[in-house]
View 1 (cartoon, protein in one colour):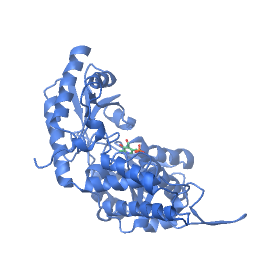
View 2: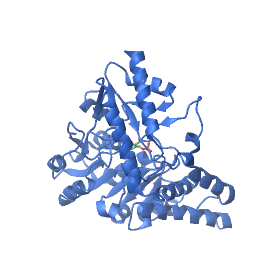
View 3: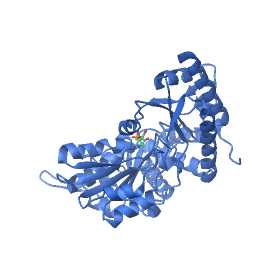
View 4: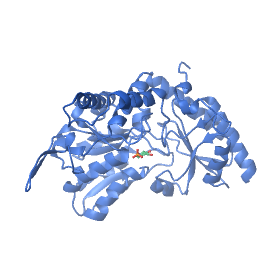
Length: 404
Ligand SMILES: Cc1ncc(COP(=O)(O)O)c(C=O)c1O
């Protein structure tokens, strides 16, 4: 394998925690940050920081330049046609809420429908529930097949003349399933229905080309992408953004404010009220540069290798039931441990220096679909090694011996 996991780039992984090297298998919740990201943020805050857009002094100009450079870096990363199609938000969740409030809400009435899948994260469910509660819209759920995949023709079948939006994840944070977004967008567009894609996991593990996918909106988040917390991205087609009402109100999103009238700035400023996440934007740009410095296909192959190695190992445990075996899936391993509670398993793993997540993973509809209350989830990032998987397997054996 040509790819060498750059563990030493990540300060938190390079030193022991409680006397043990950390096997961090929770990157789907949040990825660790490489030193270059931390340094870029410190360096910027130490030497170039000021508020953006509103000052005439030198630092204000420099900071604005850095902030707008970050927007360009994001646009290039997902191959957006125009950098003004990139809106900085505070996370993937806010990006999806922005679509719900500013795009869908004025366009949806009682009885209209939103199509979504049962594998969505709550971030791509709750904003649509708001439309159900507040506008009496109807949620139409596309089922997930037993292997964790979606049948695109089920999406086609769910769309009716009343459908106002299809909301779908690029990659499931529980199953690892990578959905055929391009095909689903084409199906929806053939019926004149826009599509919002939750790319919180997809942007990390897939090479995203929003022009090729042709999605109307693509939402993702900095902290899973080896960048900082507090920053997310909403990509939206320029034609949509121009017609959308503002989201938050405040400074920077206006053209003019008078006592009895107001007009709004053009996108993206219209959707970036107040002081934006400036230091975080610099950090996100550094994270994108860091990730893009690798052969992304090699990173993916490496993560896939770890997944398959772990999958084969848990396959020997008759007390483990893996959930999510779609033919196209990324490096996320979710499983039920029969006779043991996922939280107990994760607690014992933690004692062994293995950080795994246990719970419903903000995907309760999916948990219900598979008839489980919770799973244990190991998710892999570019820094993981087979040693981390070995630590997971040893920890699972220990959990079994203690709990059963
Ligand atoms: C698939 C998916 N969508 C959305 C989110 C929400 O992202 P954030 O917490 O950054 O708002 C997550 C985070 O776990 C996720 O995994």
